[in-house]
View 1 (cartoon, rainbow, N blue to C red):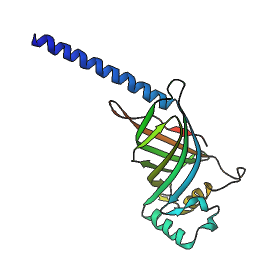
View 2 (view 1 turned 90 degrees about the vertical axis):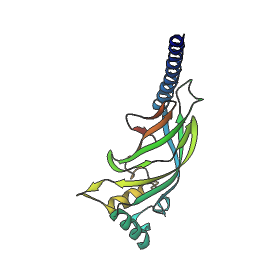
View 3 (view 1 turned 30 degrees about the horizontal axis):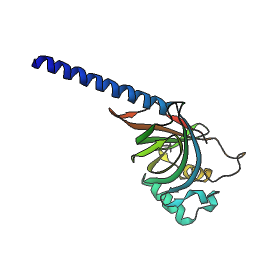
View 4 (view 1 turned 60 degrees about the vertical axis):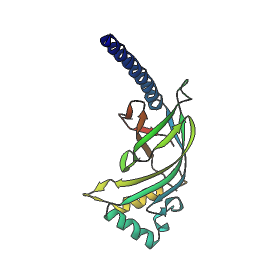
Length: 195
């Protein structure tokens, strides 16, 4: 009798776990196949400096340059931003939401990795427009073994440029770790965010 009860309990647990696994796979597939569109950058600060107000390197004050030079030298760059991200889930999955527990990101300029970081704050995403606030340390790509302040200044002014003809191709890529019913799951590849 005890043996039979143990077998029934084990079978029940296997069925429950299988149900959670199927649900988890569907959630992961829905957000992996989703279309992501960066609708707007409402705010972006780098070590407290508002980058959206900087259209040219000349717009940086001596104090701004000193703050950024010090942060680059000490490898202590930190970004905070508010983004408008539109998420289009595949047909039939629009009611799902996802908690991103960690978000690796990178910015490519003309296909070259320029900066990257990791957001370790949970973010809830759903179908439609999401306004998200992010805080992240920033690591710049190195040149001759050192991060370049000139690359940083160029990257910082790209976000505020209005003239699309002069603007290089900027690509934001994300690699989220999402919370599932069986624990955190990191997507295997970066996802391009369209702008």
